[in-house]
Image (cartoon, rainbow, N blue to C red; front, side, top):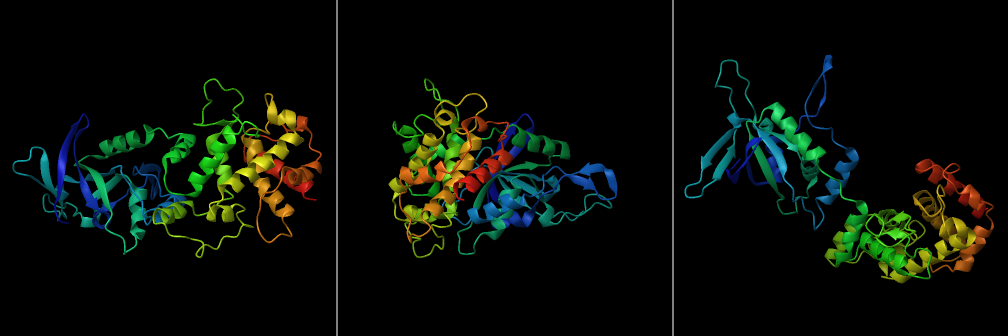
Length: 383
């Protein structure tokens, strides 16, 4: 590979170099070492990397081809010192030209050669790198910033990997969704976020001051039982499926009205989304949950310890059931519309689930309780 300019950084663990390499070049020189049992030695484990996640890799392969794709954090590499030429740049303190080369094994007798494709070991960033294998040829070269440790032994590599991955704190998902408040372009997440804020602010609606805006309770407000991320995710199940691609198209101001093949009978809010009719999304959700509140007023308005209706278990089952109720009511109509509270009431009037049954013993927290409540709603309400 051609030399790259790098800056030297000194930290307690030692020195490393930061620079930028295009993904095509990096894929030619880098490899990962997955931690696993050594073949033939079940009591011995080698390697430090986790295995590739198929689901995450699939997401990244799609993501790298989007118009706003970015990997701003460093891919961390360890390169054997025998595979590196470092030359200081005249007149630039701390700057070097670094070139990765093959090692022919000539330093010591019976030494093992190192081919170029094994010269660099990926300490952190293997999913990003693997995803970039599917970068479209029509795309501009994707540069990655890299942190390169030259000559780091396996113990140092393991220490770096552990620190990078164990010391990181995951961002609260509600906070991440809330940041879409700043987004200018239309996307399913942006629309869902805006609808959730409107629901939480409607002082006559069922969600008034019910939603924890950043995933934690708002100071001075009681009764917030639902995390913002929970409600946003619930709405997203009824909006266009390919949310990242939708955002990418929005950035380019290209309409998908002729390209998309999603029917409102698959994703009930998709036509409202296409037509920028976000008020209809808001009204449908508000009306549906107002019918819920009228059916079980105490369980929704004043949930005592152990009741699940106005919490994650109940909400997830209800927002899933909303599609079934919506299609049931509009079964003979050709186009979607706003369903009135009174129409939803007729569905809930068929149900004989009592408020005292809506507890965590009958509907345990988690997917099994949500699934059980959803099944009961569907069987009783749509029969």
